[in-house]
Amino acid sequence: MFPRETDSLSLTFAALADPTRRAMLARLAQGPATVKELAEPFTLSMPTISKHLKVLERAGLIQRGREAQWRPAQLHAAPLREVSTWLEDYRQHWEANFDRLQDYLRKIQKGDAS
Amino acid sequence: MFPRETDSLSLTFAALADPTRRAMLARLAQGPATVKELAEPFTLSMPTISKHLKVLERAGLIQRGREAQWRPAQLHAAPLREVSTWLEDYRQHWEANFDRLQDYLRKIQKGDAS
DNA sequence: TTACCATTTAGCTAACTAGCTAAACATGTT
DNA sequence: AACATGTTTAGCTAGTTAGCTAAATGGTAA
Image (cartoon, rainbow over all chains, first blue to last red; front, side, top):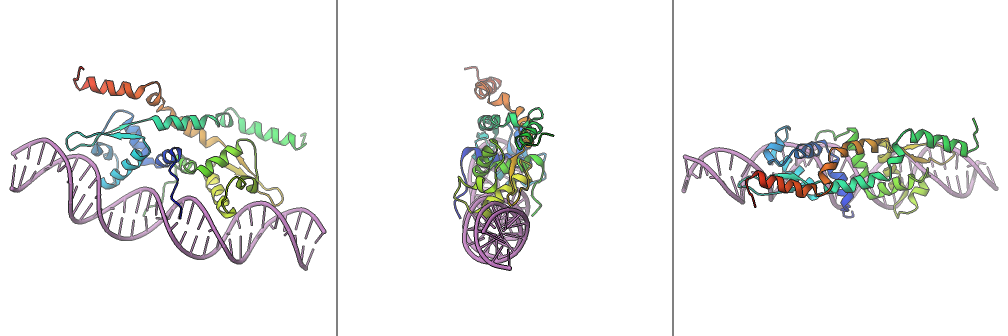
C-alpha cells in the first residue's frame, strides 16, 4: 500500500538476509569477480544471479565495472560499517552472561529475594 | 516456488531490515515492555505491532512472558552476536581507507605504474 | 455476569521477492 | 557478416510481507 522502506540500513539488512547473496559477498571479499564466476557455486539461472547482484548493488555493497563483455563486481564494504555501528549499542546485551544478569536484576527488583 | 530461507542468520537479518522493528529493539534495550508500550511511538494498528513482534520472536531477538493480561517482551540479543561474528570477516574491508588501498593494489597489478 | 482493557487471530489487499524461460544486448573473434 | 560468449531485460508464477478492519480471546474489576 505504501512504498517500502528505503533507508540505508534497511536496504543493507534486507540484502544480507539471503544466503546466496552472503556467499557472493564472501567470494568478493577475496577479490573482484565476473558474474559467471559468482554464479559458479550455485545451481541458479543467470538472470537470477543478475537479480541478486542488483540487490547488492542497490544496497551499495558492491560496485560494478565494465571490461569488454564482462561486468566485474567488487565488494564495497562501507554499508557494513553502518551495520557494525548499529550493532555496537547491543554488544553489552549479548556479552558474558548479560542476559542471565538481566534476569537476576529483574528478579530482585520485583522483591523476590530468593 | 521453494520454501524461503530459514537459516538463523537470514532470519535475523530479515527481522532487522525494518525500521519499526529496529526501533522496537532499541526500546527493549532499555528494559522489558508491554505490546501497548512498544506500539506507543508508532501510528500502526495493534495487529500490525503484534505481527512485528512475531517476526522478532521468530528470529529469537525477543522473548515473551505472561503477566495477567500483558505479554511483556524482552530483548534477547544472542542472535546479534552471530551477526557480529559474521561481520568481523569484513571489518578490514571497511576500515581505514581499505577500499582505496584495494583500488591501488589492483591498479599496479594490472601494470599501470602511474 | 457484565464490562473493560490488552492482545491475538482471521481474512483481506497491495507490493515485493526469488525463481524460471526466452529473448535481447554487448563485445570480441573468425 | 556471422558467430560465440557474457550479461541483462521482459514477462511470467508462487510465496512472503506489511498494512488494514473486524472479531475473538484472556484476564481483571465492578
